[in-house]
Length: 135
Image: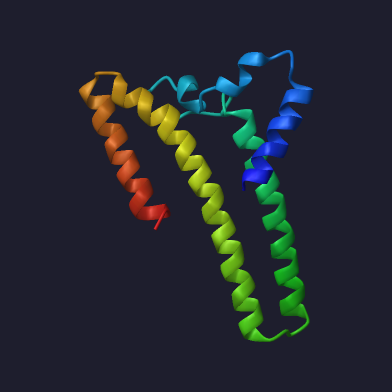
């Protein structure tokens, strides 16, 4: 993963010298009027994280195509199951990156807000994410 982030940093630096503040961008929580969930496009996602996730998702897409071929070719079930587990772990990696970004930006902002309702809503959202998606 570190290699992907390094490549992403270099690409962003070479293509985005005009927007020096882009690497400090917040996630979509700044675009949300309700303070909890962003509506529409996530305009402020960290470009390095976005690029790393896109790279990872493209790799996962290739793995899925490989799985389809394995099934078509009636490959050994244990080999297919091993590849399925690999895809699942790669997807969990994307989810961890997104959770890290969410914690650093959206959650931190809500918890620092001093507004009890916003803080409680964020705690509930985080617990829901952890229990439902990041097991």
